[in-house]
Length: 193
Image (cartoon, rainbow, N blue to C red; front, side):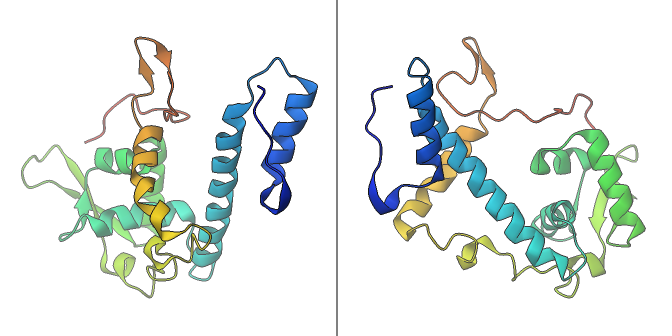
């Protein structure tokens, strides 16, 4: 509410939006916009960079998300659909659709768990994990390509920010008390095997 505005060359579009809201509605606490708007804009820029990196290989961002979850699982590169749902923050129905589409392309296959014949596993097929199919190096966050403006000292704080954003979505005090919790658009309601 009576917070000083940033001035000079460091002022950005978010600063202008916040200043306009403070001018028009001084009764509202618009301070959260300073963070939320920047996070939203950063996410949009990263999404565009990902799409550009994958377009040359005929991949969608969601395909990379599923394939990379399987690849980082280690040999034999397989996970249950429930594990994939948790790692990619989509609903079980969405994941079922994605697995089917990737299977049609020959990038993954459904197999039966040896430990529990009722359980299905999704396994990365050899073409799905090769560098010719997935542009692992062209989109690798550690390369710095995705975050050239962030100084190295701030990078260790990213995992803490992510934890705060993906923490419990509700508490006794209600949703998001004092934090930026994550609530998927449609949280999974039925676990998959």
